[in-house]
Structures are given as structure tokens and as C-alpha cells.
Length: 95
Image 1 (spheres, one colour):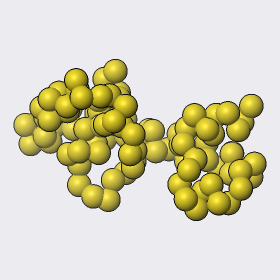
Image 2 (spheres, rainbow, N blue to C red):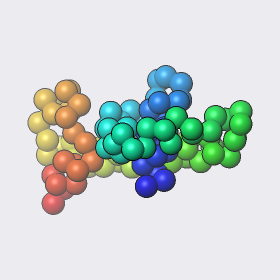
Image 3 (cartoon, rainbow, N blue to C red):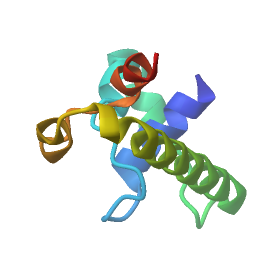
Image 4 (cartoon, helix red, strand yellow):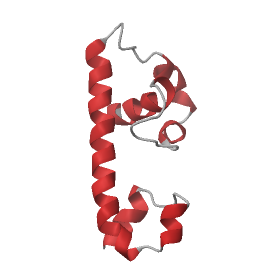
């Protein structure tokens, strides 16, 4: 759950362009976590928390880029051009 919260906080608090664009990160947590995402500490108040969030989103970006490179040959270009490929779909395509 903590990783999901950090991914959502990256979408809400960090400067654009985002390292890891995840349009579902906030939605998937649901409204019960809105306040917790808002309370996410800033880099000025808690530098370790911001650094940990940065590490987690960089790791997620790297993992999805590597996965995408492996899946891309088996998926039509239209899927990639429209941004339809997400982790669950990519895992299914690798099976």
C-alpha cells in the first residue's frame, strides 16, 4: 500500500514532466486515501521521504520500460501510439 501511495503522491505533488506517468495511481487508491496523499511530505519538510518516493517511481519507470521493450514486438503499434499498454496487459502478452 505504501508504494501505491508514493506513486499517487508523485502524480499529485512532483514537478512536470513526471518521471513515471501513471493516470491510474490516484484513482486506484480510491477516495479514502485522498487526505493521506495530500499530507505527503514535501522535499523541504522530509527530504528522505521525497527521496524514497523518487527512488520508487524511477524503479517503476525502469521496470515498465524494460517490460515494454520485451512486449512491444508482440503488440500492434496502434496500442503503443495510443498509450494503451499498461503493466497488466503487458504481463498477459508475455504469457
